[in-house]
Amino acid sequence: MRDTLSLLFYLMRLRVRTRLEFRASLVIAWVAQAFGYAGVFTQLWLILTRFENLGGWTWPQMAMLLGFHTLGYALGACFTLVQLRRMEEIVLGGEFDTLLVRPINPWAYLVFSGFNVEYGGHIVLGAGLILWALPHLGLVWTPGTVFLLAGGLISAALITASTITIISAFALILGRARYLFGLYFDFWELSRYPASIFAPALQLMLLTVVPLGYMAFVPVSVLLGRPVPYLGSFAEAAALAAGPLSVLAAVAFWRFCMNRYQGGGG
Image (cartoon, rainbow, N blue to C red; front, side, top):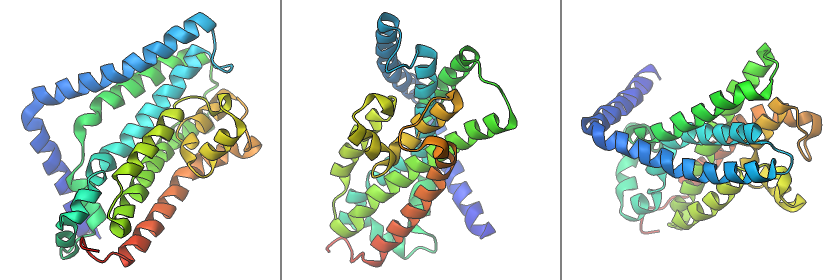
């Protein structure tokens, strides 16, 4: 086990060193991504400046929500999105078959060897929004608050990585998966807003079938003392458990698809 972990981290370090050979290009990518997200967030700031709140959420609260969502997503996507979004091409092109004969788990090899450092802009922007918002929210800092903040971010990262893994696994049995990423990002964009502003059916979907509401809305609502629809007093436990439970679901589904994989030719 230790040798495997050492190999995986070596692959990740090798990827990072390779990408750092082009530092100027990397910094430009960080800045471009940060500006793209900042443009969307600025639009929300202008709306909230004009109307004071969005479904009862003020700008500092929204900034916390957006920062939480962006940072949690970046921490999970840097390990999975770019690598596994190519799963359809990897399977149909026969590349996945070559991974099966290597003495390492195919998923682990894809994830660590393709570690993406280009999410630096997301991380800086997300962390910056959180750090700006915290002094304006009047939170009472206790060990439980710190644990919820850190645990919620970890859970958000796990939800992101698990969801992307589940989507990519469909390519193992269907040969197609890329179109599912379009659906994922449709719901992902909705999850950056307070779920409480949507119709009850969509709220329920974001908390059950497509549990992206746990990426930011649920943990941030608990931190702010705001009610969470359908969860009530279980919201805090659900915010922390959602990530680990999504990992278990992703592992089970990946193994299910692997057991039925018949090669790129079907």
